[in-house]
Length: 444
Image 1 (cartoon, rainbow, N blue to C red):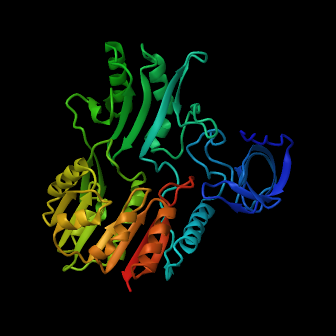
Image 2 (cartoon, helix red, strand yellow):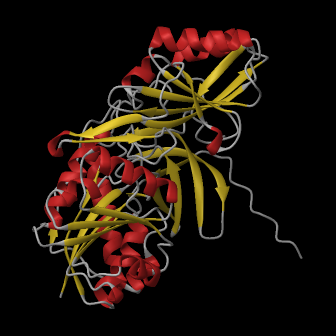
Image 3 (cartoon, rainbow, N blue to C red):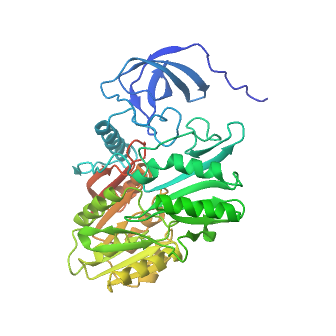
């Protein structure tokens, strides 16, 4: 017999908020059951309305804050209540990073069954206009006779938030949201563009227009005029990711650049390549990673999930050799291109399945004494389970998901004999619940 789902009680309720969830929602305990209330903060008394009732928890919509927290601030973005791009603008910046640090330490304790000997000071940079990579949805709405360019709505992802600005986006893109909308409004085929992807380098900003059909000659001219007036490099994407090409300027290169000035290194990257969203924080993160690696001239370093060499190239300046391994052959080519451009000859890169440490070991065919791991959100489970094959004396683990970091820490510390020396958070994505962290392990 099919179970009938319980209907939420429509009557507004008043409750005390006791905590924050991993995704930044306020947590209340009502009759022993957790209720997650978006926009509520710990210590607040709030009025809310149930939106869903589940077996293990409930969800609610914030109606009003009766007793606000001292940590509550007025969101800077006028679209914050509706837009799904941010989730923590109502919490002051210092307490955002404190929340992330507490979350990391809690997960290391609960799932990693350990704590760092030293908690690193949080790594922070600019809180606004930091976002150099973003994917903006585009839709021309016939009823309104206007285009929408922005992130999806927080609670209705089928809809696009009608925004006029975005204070977390790269500053130039932030001020040009309305001109972008006007460009779509002016086009002959107003439904041609479905998405605009932002990729900003240090000097140039690329906009990738996902065009569902070929641009008409008139629309090509309008896009060119927009690019000239607002100084953008325009790419078109008529199909999958491999179809992206530089449309403007004519005969323009496919690459943008960013630099690590402390190491006199400049990278070229394609706008679809993975690069760190926050350039200022990335520079600090690379410096911290190298500090934790404690590189010596005799060291041979294995850089796993190396990408285009964000860590590999600066490390190569301080050790005998860096061996970078990456799952994508395209990114390996990009890493070699950047090594050559920066006149670094003591680096080698390999494309390999990073779920198979034995394959990695066969490829490098030599001993490494230090390892840097910078995996995707899924973590590095197979690598840490077989870390004995590599047996490094020191591991620096850069994580974009504290849950998988805690899981992998448990294996490294409680099964493989490593000690968690240091760990801390890095605020790569201010005003969101995303937690970036870094940890140092040494052989016990």
